[in-house]
Image 1 (cartoon, helix red, strand yellow):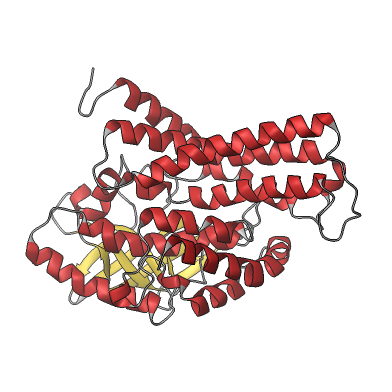
Image 2 (tube, rainbow, N blue to C red):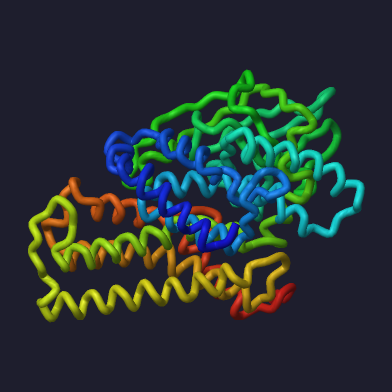
Length: 397
């Protein structure tokens, strides 16, 4: 399916099915279940699934350019949809890019087929919870463990900020495999697909936040959960290596925030032109300062978009140091830029735009959350960028 066709499909789903409920999901802090009904019906749960398995066959750049057309209508839906697609991309083209023995690849192809067809043909939803309290997964092993038993594993542990908790059909859970008498290392990390209705899986805590209120990113608990041996999303070692081999995958959340930034700018234009539905048709566009401020907002938006488009179009396995630097620049400019555009939009539009009956204050709150998103928070992105600028691959002092 072409990029233009996918964008048109996302626009239709976003406009007709996501937008009418976005304010309610934010206000109530409820998961956008109806969004997933619409995504399923449109075939978008198979967006990055190969066509041979019933999907739409989008590559990374196509996926990234499609999702903003959902996010502009409901960022909560788009952000959680990123998690689903992330699972499909990890088990799919990310794994395929590894240089592994043919036997291992053939074994995994059977598992790929299972995961792909669940999403594309059966409409199942996957989540990608990996956060653990105080964990930097590039420096330490996951505390969630998988112990080998006959026919599979027993998993114990917990994941925090687990978007779609209680609403996904499967969780893609990164675990450290443990065995008696062996000290685990990064090669023992395995990503398992755990059915949400498995005995021992539970959801705890509340989710009452500033923004992204409908993601339901509560805590997932795993207590002696049996996982069959065929339920592998990423085999041993490859899950850890994915961040090094395919680092651009982990900037995937920027597509949600790029869409948010565009939606905020569009609102400012509509507001100043007196074209916001439900508001008096008062035009403010003739005020010189509003024109200047809107121009600066457009400059900020286009700068972020240009950096972002270049980064996603050159994404691929084993990128150069220069490409990595551009990726970090794009990550930072989109995630911080969306929040800055939201901040400036409120100032430009004035007090009337703060009303909860209008979408700007919700979009601003959602946009403010972007720079906190792991693994490339704004701080981490800047630190990684500085190091990449000053050190070649493998260099140390």
